[in-house]
Image (cartoon, rainbow, N blue to C red; front, side, top):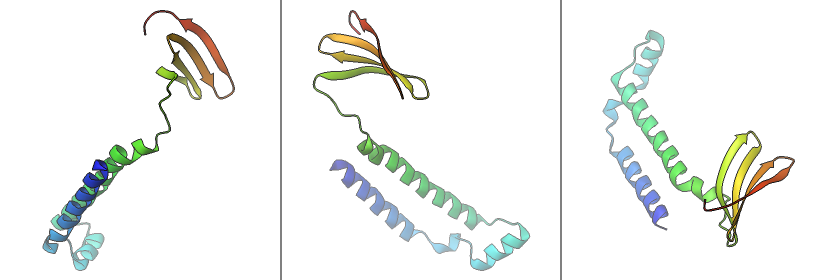
Length: 123
């Protein structure tokens, strides 16, 4: 709930900032036509480009920070815990799995699952 409130307040602040910007800093249609034919870039065009990139990067940051963790499929188990995970090569991963007080090294590929060894001691 706190994340949703923070996201909505950020979007509201961003919207009010967009409405507060004075249009005199942006290039007019005549300037854009002249710059396209003459190759000159106006100061207003650069400000508009920087502002647009800031908005896009802001949305990417918010999406990566708040929305992507909601889509993660890893659930916490009561009995089985994954202590460590290492990707050995594409589609081959090794896991250290702990069940109760026992731990095992397991290697998983797209076609096989192999229990390598039982690990002794604390991990």
